[in-house]
Image 1 (cartoon, rainbow, N blue to C red):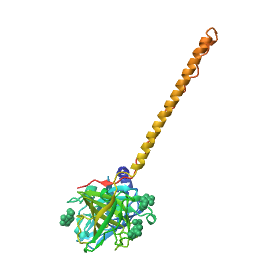
Image 2 (cartoon, rainbow, N blue to C red):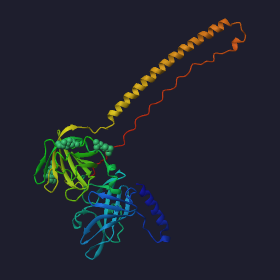
Image 3 (cartoon, rainbow, N blue to C red):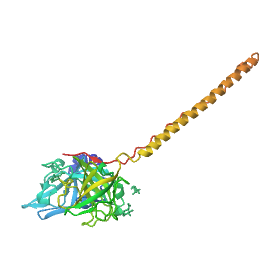
Length: 396
Ligand SMILES: *[C@@H]1O[C@H](CO)[C@@H](O)[C@H](O)[C@H]1NC(C)=O
Ligand SMILES: *[C@@H]1O[C@H](CO)[C@@H](O)[C@H](O)[C@H]1NC(C)=O
Ligand SMILES: *[C@@H]1O[C@H](CO)[C@@H](O)[C@H](O)[C@H]1NC(C)=O
């Protein structure tokens, strides 16, 4: 990250002039995209960033807690923040740190893993605490005793002015979901709805899942009938897709984010949903702790090959036809020139013969050179489409 380089530069600057400025603290700035913006976090809700602070990421521990954090250190993808205020543990003050391993999806969307242990004394949040006054490095703040499950990741989506950026975060859904499906929904309480004639469309737009709420009004993915894919990861044979709801969340029926665990067996696709981030241990089995299961069969399947395929074919045919035409034109021009040249040489030879005794004639050269055919210009290559899926590598 660029930020890093600048930080280390300032670090050196402050060390050199530390005695003059009587400070040894270097400035930690959040990544440029995040700065001075309001973001929705799939785990923590609305987060406001300034250059150096993050507000809205609430934690509590032992009747202390905070929602305001300072940028502490950044190293590569690891962003360490330190909570303002301390936790009092048996009379001694402690500081809380979170370590986010950030990955950029678009300028308006990021995903991250929390690289710390689960703290039973902090509402099972992942964070690390150190005695106030301790110098805490990135590796200390990001230390953990057990690996973070691959599916336990979170996303950040920039909200902007009334969510004007929300359409910009759209990514493709994973292959098993690219199609139009009939689905049966079973709630965690065992209630079955939808079924025959129901329509889930992830085919018209491969970044958008649309439900026909007229046909079956039961809520899918905690949305009003349309969600966009933000990102997905693959763990084993299960895809974990985080979707964002462009409608209005109410915190009970409708949520901003939900996670869809997706697996495919033959042509049957199974989805189990959860509101917010994907959870550790989430899979395509209903757990009875909220969320519904969808058993889906496709009406039509589409592929994950680029949408530009058909137009590319047209372009290729166009280029081939143009090349054949160019060659034909060049051949005709060449033939005409050849004939003309032959005729001219013939005329010249005839003149020469007729004027063989004219002394001036010898100085007259053959000046009318055959015209060169213009070189065929290279047809420009079609641009590769920039729409790509971000597939995070599994981490251990
Ligand atoms: C598909 O998505 C594009 C880009 O967001 C949008 O312009 C278009 O209207 C969508 N098409 C349909 C049928 O929803
Ligand atoms: C949704 O379902 C209703 C009722 O079956 C149907 O009339 C309507 O055309 C469907 N809408 C779409 C967009 O498929
Ligand atoms: C899903 O997780 C539950 C509980 O952790 C486990 O019992 C079940 O076998 C898992 N199902 C699949 C399909 O992996």
